Length: 327
Image (cartoon, rainbow, N blue to C red; front, side, top):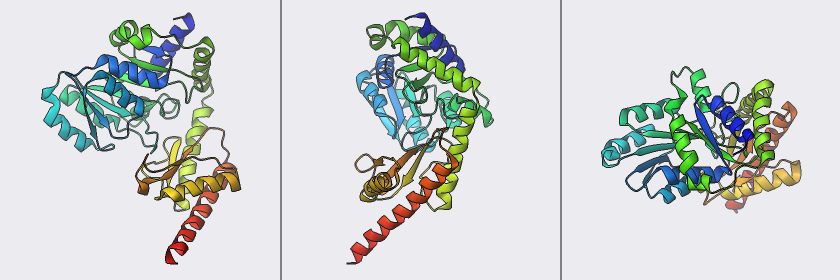
């Protein structure tokens, strides 16, 4: 590591309200390295069914037992803890801060309650929440504190983030207690025997944190755009699934994979709007969608135009499908 690596790690730890952080060369690899190294076949990992592939690959590497619980279903998670906790040495609850497909925010208060009640570890993947939620973009810990949750961020054993999204670079990190971070720093094969983040990417990430901390309008405008896009969708009767406009990930559910494909194609070709379809088998056919990502630089005119064209085009696609079915 070079001095700028340490400076970046301190900035990330400070942003997440914990003691230390370690930066690794890739976001996907960070989850694989960390989960694969910390857990073993005598442990159990309980994860949300929509968790990212990198987490699943880390679980496979660890050899730990694995169970999923229904998306954000606290009751389902607790029922599994009641049944299984006593059979394993360590148990990890693994969730995302903001879910990449649905854009909803993890119920951190309830996960903390279960962690305390059952003596578990808790890991939060902040790939889509760091830089986007909380008044200064410092993630779901800040978000929930501002909702009135009284907790110390150090209670979350592992805060994970990636530099390839809001930091516009490449790499990943784990933040938490100093003892645990030092253990990862000196014993994780994927860190010890790998090259570090290149200087230009590390410094770019550090600069991004400084910029949005100093220029608070960036996060404020981003969050205003998220709320506005969601409002415009609702006014036009569009289905956003569980998203509430609290994060920059806002899906528009079409309910049919072919409709999603056609909508994506027509929006791009006819209106210059680029939104990728998520279709079966990535999601169930009736959950097919287009996924929209908001930024601080989108204008009111762009948001209104986009929502108008989504509503008009989707209505036309559905009408054509209905007419064809009648024939």
